[in-house]
Length: 257
Image (cartoon, rainbow, N blue to C red; front, side, top):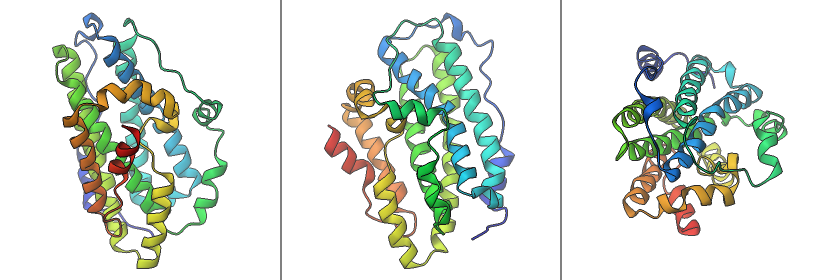
């Protein structure tokens, strides 16, 4: 299925641009160690957008005009998030989270492409790519907006700016997934649901491994209010055609906490 440029793509392009974080006083801010560790992982995830776009090319998604137009700007904006976070973290004192499996570093070097190759033949790969993108960007928006609370003003301003941009990325992925899902057959919808349940993991788990991820986020996730906001991701997924009741985040949190 090839979709031409859509309203949500035009809205994304009209609001495109890099966040303004230079000369804002970030170099004078001090983070507590737990917040710094989470933001270190966040910087890794922003950098890993390059891996996601590389997989998208492997999957043949650049044949989709709307996705092909979105991905370069998305990667550019996410890379700027990483630069800002790395600048903020460069003089902070914290224990750097380390991946817990050898396969993680391989993935980050763009070598682990084989799992993506068979999916290039799956007719609804673009749909799943957008569903996973929407879920990831929703969680990223929650993470940055929550971390902004209680931060020094320059840090809070940076994290709110990133959260706003992540929300814009989320809006594109969500609208794209809904449009593609509405055009899918029931059979392809059932297949997509099974694949989604098999491949979805919270952002950061594929990068760190579950043990290191839990060490960084377990205390943060213990907050019932944050849990409630994260579980709202399931409502986002439920609103996409064919995916009602998948319950990805609730199932994960029940198992992890």
